[in-house]
Length: 316
Length: 257
Picture 1 (cartoon, rainbow over the protein chains, first blue to last red):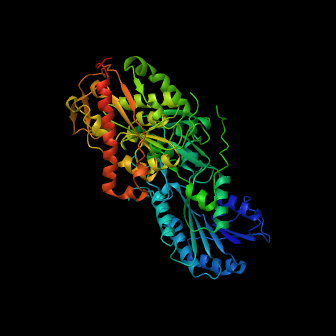
Picture 2: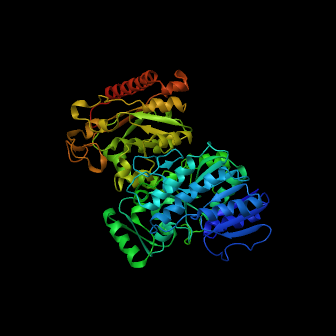
Picture 3: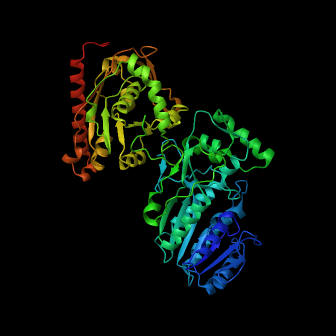
C-alpha cells in the first residue's frame, strides 16, 4: 500500500506519517501540507516524501495528484488537513475545510491509482442535546444549526460531503469521526481550556466526556487503511470521565460557576490572553456530554482504544 | 457495597453513562434513614429479580417527586446487589445537580439509544410506564394506573428480557399532588407540581415483586414492531402490576403500619 497524508505537518498528520513509515504493509508514504516541513517529519527517502502544497489551490493539487502521487502509485489518501483555530473564519478557511475535501474526493474518482480515501472528521459534528442518547452512534443527528460557528459548520459540511459519496463512486470512502484528541497543537478545545490554572465549568453539571490519545487516533487510521472498510465510524478514546475529573487529573482547579456567566468570562479570556477556547463551541457538551459509541469501529475495523491519555496527575 | 457485576469501568471509576460505584455506596448510606426509619420499607419477593442478565422492572409511579423511584432503587440495591438503571424522562439531563447526581447512581434518560445499549449490556432496567403523568397523580387517582406506555413491552420483546412487575404501595398516599401548574415549564419539565403537603408523609412503603413475565416467550421478536401485539403485551404487564397493587393493599393493615 502507498499512502498520501494531507495536513502532514500538523501533530496528527506527522504522527500518522511516522507510524505509516514503520508499517510493513505500507511501501511508501507521501505527505503534503502548506509550507516547509519541520523536524516532526522523517527525512525524504525511499519510504517517505514531502510535498509542500496548498490544498486550496486546485492547480497545485492536480499537479500533485497527477504528478508525484500517480508516479508513486499511491492507492490511498488520508485527508487530515483542516484549520484548527476557531477564530479562523471566512472564505479561505471554508475553502480548505470543505472545498478541498470535495475537490479531493472528486479528483480521486477519476485518478488512475487512488482507490481509497480516509477522511478525518470529529465528534464535533454531532448535535449534543439533553434529549439525545448519552452515547452517540454514527446515526446520531448532526449539528446543522445555521447559527453555529463556522468552525463547526465547516466540519459538518466536510463530513457530509464525504458521506454523500459513500458507495456511489469507484473510490472507497471512510469517514472517521474522532473523539477529541487531547494533545497540543491539534486544535483541541479541551487542551486549550485546561491551559488555565482555574477551569470554570457550569454549576450543577458534570457531563461525561471521552478523549482520544494520539496513539489511538493513529491506530484507528492505520486500521482503516489496512482493512479498507468503507463507511462512517466513530473513534472513541480510552478515557471516559466526568469533566470535573478531567480538570482534576490535569491538576487544575475546578470551579463551578453559574452557566450563563461562562460565555462572557471565556470571551474575556480569549480576548485578553489570545487563547482559542470558545465556550459557545463547548456549551452543549459541557452540559450533556456526548460520548462516542465505538462499537461499529470495534466490529468492522477491529479498533478498540487501548492507549489512555498520560494524565499529569495520577488517579487517586 | 461490592461493585455491581455489570459495571463497565471506563478507566476512571465511571461507566459510559456516568455511574460510579462509589456514588452508589454513598447514595445507599444517605438514603438509609429514609428507607429504614421514615418510610420503613417492607419488601417482599425480591428473589424474583434475576441476579444476572438483562431484565426490566416495571412499577406504578406517583408522588410529586420520584421518591418511589428512590426507594425502589434502594430496595433493589440492598436485596440483589444489582444497581437498577432507572429510566427517567428526557428532560432530566437539563436539571442542574439532579442530572449529575442521577447519572452517578445509574439513572439514565429514556432515549431509545440509551435503553437499547443498557439491555445489550445485560443491565437491569426500571421503567415506570406511567411516566411523568404518574408522578402528578392527585389523591383521588391513587393506585389508578395512568396512561400506560408500551415502551417496556417493546424492549422486553425485542431484547428477550423478562419483565418483573413491581407494586409500590404507600408512595401514592405519601405525597399526592394537589395542583399541577401546566403553564410553568422549568428546565423542560412538563408542569410544576404543587404537593398537598410540604414533605412526604411517613406512610409505610410496601414493595412487592411479582413473578417474571416472559413476554419474549409469548411474542416473537418481530412483534416488537406490531402495535397490536405491543398493546396486548403492555396490557398483560399492566394487569400484573394492578393485581400486585391490589394484593399488597389488602394485605397491609393501615397507612402507617
